[in-house]
Image (tube, one colour):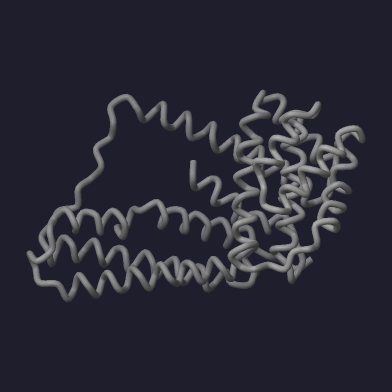
Length: 277
């Protein structure tokens, strides 16, 4: 199967736009007379376009991982080039703020005693996102054994409700991408059949009615109705996690074609969820 990274064309366009915006800001700082811009405005510019922003760090992590795991995937070289150019533009902006406009870049003051707690919370959130990703990826691979293993890990962590929240975040990201790219989606009945076929090996038959109703709700974009339908039934949060995960796997497959679909098609959704930790 062809090596793919889901949503790469959209990512390249988004990153190119970010580079263009940084280039415009660099030109503005070069043209502005020293002392003509308020210090507070310059600090805000550095917060958005400095060399240590969350966006830069996230893009660099993606680049390193993708060059390692998908070295021959289409678009990798363009992505790496844009990441390098983005960092250069941001470094130039920070340099202009200090050398041309004479404003020292203020470092964010750490909150005493909060670092250890924040780190622990971040690690937990990342772990929840990983568990959600594993469940969705198992459905994407149509591997009931992997699904059962993923569910066992979720139960061992006693985190069904929390993982369900992360699965919903994956669902929302992929659904939003499907809308913005105007992806050609299958009719509702066809999508329902695909999802139910994935669920057949792991969901009891008496819970399939609730799952089918929820799938139709998800297909119509009504996440709240789907969630209420599932959680109110005998399957509860566990059935909800299964249904949302299987639906997201099917939706991602539709969004990521042509070229075939692999679990790498969920990579971008995973990055976005992890980035929001």
